[in-house]
Image (cartoon, rainbow, N blue to C red; front, side, top):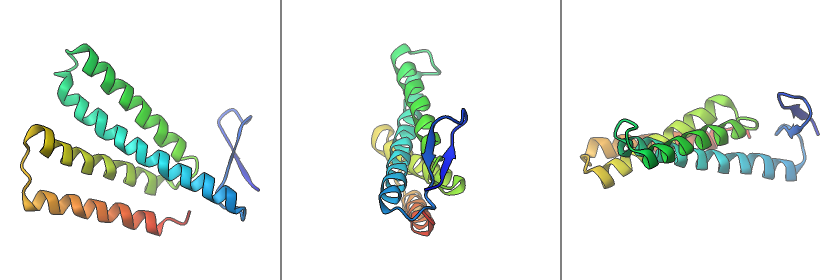
Length: 135
């Protein structure tokens, strides 16, 4: 099993190009799960920005900052295993679609056919990237 060293070189992280099925299921499956959670947290901080009132409200600002940091942290962990282009595009896509949906539900933003069709295309892109991922 080949390992990729982290920045300090002390803790190995398994690569996904080995033949070990357990490694493949844990490494890639966990990476996709963490990436999805990171995308949901991106939605949380994006929506949280609306509630911060320009960072003048303490608790919404704290919650937004925590979601922001957690989202980037989980994305960085997923990037240890997943390809950069795929992971970043999926993270942004989950965040964009989730933000559109919550904007419609929470802030009475328009739910026009074109907006919903565009969000559907983003979801199709996310699914396509997942299916096309070599991992």
